[in-house]
Every structure is written in structure tokens, then in C-alpha cells.
Image (cartoon, rainbow over all chains, first blue to last red; front, side):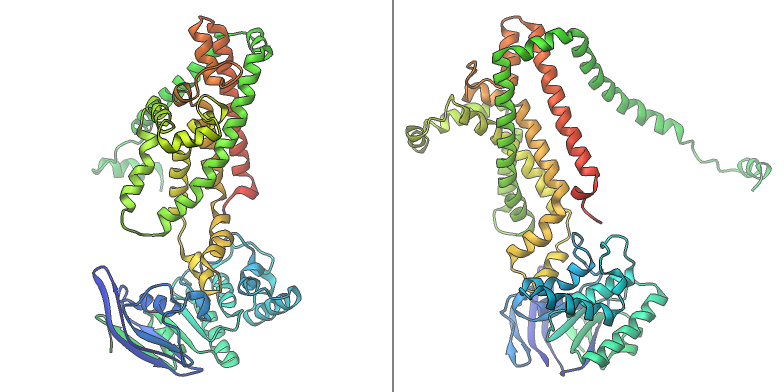
Length: 210
Length: 279
């Protein structure tokens, strides 16, 4: 369970005050709001990429609000994938495991498992350049899930995709939801994303949760 | 659309301006500069003969100067990269008070006249800390001073290049790496640095080329002693000052070929796979 309470964030002119919400274990929450309303900022705060002024973030009972990003155990799928351009697909998928010094065989097994789950077995030895938008998002998902995170953050993961690819990704995300029982926060401005995927919808307007 | 239709349309009114005068003017301006560069080289080449160049290459002093130039330039290049990479990283990835001032300070070696840099170095080594160092290792008028003089200028160019390189790379990949368990250091080595190979190559070659051409600071800080602190630009200066223009031109050509050679090698590695950044 993720609970965010009384979070306040200030960044120059821009500020968010008194942000409070809870996401139950195993629920897929969609955070909605207009462009520039601070959705991504909230996500970055949860990930630890941005500092907060006050408030706290509890993940499964543990206060993570002062932890480094590396200690939070949260998977991150950024908007454009932001795949590691100097590595091939399997190195991207196995990156978190390499950092955790997993044994080679176990790492290979986990990478195969993820590739199977996401339907990207045929891409494993490919370089990142030349992959399609949908393929990139699948790999970004796999990379974020590899280390069994306690929580998953998805930042507009479908906004850059064309219609048919987006429909495929909906199917995939629904499948992951069902099979992995992940707790997730999905940031978007798309009502369709929310309608198809959300167990819970959080709306943000004028710097406040409504 | 057929030809008839097109002229019909033009008759009806609006006729966009032609493109060729614009391209012609742009072309003439840029080719003038290129022509000047090539003209200079050609003049050098016709002024000397292969005999002169061979004679220059045989001279013991010039051999020493060539060797010293190549060695000091390479050391300067490596030192410049060692300094430029962390400096560029800090200056582009962190915000802190006084950053603008530091940024301006980093440009000082680029704006200062080379002679002033040499003089300032000479004075620096007359201060108490400078003299302390000198009492242990002699710096002024030795080979070490050649490297320091070259480094002071070349490094500023390497820093600029690395600044541009790092600032053009979005930090999102590093941020993802942090969430996956990386420390800042791991994210730097494993994610950021591999993306900067081309920038490092450019910074290195720029530093190397600057170091090869450096003369002013070396003359003041290291002197122009034959077989000791004589680098190729010093040779050109010494030969010219005794009226031996042929030898001066021959040495100049050696420098042009060396510089051009390095540039070509860099371009080659920059174009083939393993130094190219993807995306």
C-alpha cells in the first residue's frame, strides 16, 4: 500500500500543497490532470527524484520520504521509455539485477521470464535504436519490473503510441495487473487510459487533489 | 499537374521568390573562407621542397622538438580530459550558488592573451606555494612547464566541449538508473559516460590540437632552449628569428600534417560504430 500524506512541494513559482491519497495493495491507480498541473512532479517525488518540503510517503508501512531513489524499491516507466541507449535490450532488462549482483544464470532466467511475459523474446539482442515506440515501452516495463519492486510508477506510458499499439499495450497492462497483482500509479491526461485500466482514479486540479 | 496549369497559376498572381540567389550568396561567403585555408596550405607547400622537409626531419633539434611536442600534447590531452569530464558533469548536473561565477572563471584561459597566461604562470611559481613546489621539483623552464602551459589553455576548451556534451544529454536515463538501484557514481559510469564517447573524442582532439599549437605561454614560462623545452612552434619561431624561413615552413608543414592526421583519425573513429552514440 502506498500512502501519501500532506505532501508539499515547491519549485520556483510552482507549488503543490497538501497532497494526500492512498493506493491499496494490488490496486492500479490512475492520476489524472491537465498538462503542467504537477502530475509528473508528484510521481518524481514518490520515486525520490525530487525533494519535498513537508509531508510523508509510506510504502507498505515504511516511511520512504527521505530515502534515496535507489533504496525505495519502486519501478519506473518514464514517458518515452528512456531506455539505456548504450546497451542492448537484454542488458536493459537485466540492469537492476546486475546492480544487485545477481548470478549470471539467475539473471538470464529472469530476463527470459520478463521477455516471455512482455512478448519481446525476439528483441533480446537488439540495440535500442531502431525499436518502435511500443517495443520501447514494453522493454521499459520489463526493466522496471525486473527487481520485483513493491510499487510501479508509469509516467504517460502510452501517450506517444499510435492507436493500434496503444490497444495492444492496454491488453498487456491488464494482463500484468491480473498476473502480477502489482500496485501501481499511472500518470496520464487520457480519460481512455483511466477508463480501461483504473481501479482507482485520483484527480488533480490547481495544485490540489480533488 | 501539367506545365500549362503551373504557368496559369503563376499568371494569376503570387510568385514565390527564387531560392538560388540565397544559396549562391551563402555558398560564396563560405567558400571564400575555405579558399583562404586551402590557399595558405598551398602557399606553404610551394614555398618548400620535399628536400627541405627531409632535411628538417633529419635535424636532431627538430626531431627532439617533434618528439617533445607529440609527448607533451598527449599528456596534456589526457590531463585535460581527466579535469574536463568531472568539471562538465558538476557544471551541468548540479545547481549551486556561485555557479555563474565559476562558469565565467572557466572561460578565463580562453579569453586571456596567451602571453599573459605564460607571465601569470611564471609569477604564480614565484609565490610562496609556487616556490615550495619548485624547491622539490623544478618546474619553470623545464619540460613540466611545457605541459602546464599547454594544459592551462587546452583544458578550457575541453571543459567547454564536455559542458556542451553533458548538457545535450537528457538526465532521464540516469534518473531511471537511480530508481533501479544505482548510486550517482554508478549512474555516471554505466549510463552517462557511455553516451558521451563522441564528446570525449572531440574534447580530447581539440585539447590535443590546441596544445600542439601553443606557443605564447611556453615561450614565457618554459623558455626556448634547444633540446630542452623546444616544441614545434618554438622551432618555427627560432628558425624564423635566424632568417631560416625554409626550415620554419618545413616545420610548419610537419605540424599541419600532424594536426590534420589527428583530426582525420578522430573523424574516422567518430564515424564508425564503436565511438558513435546511439540515438
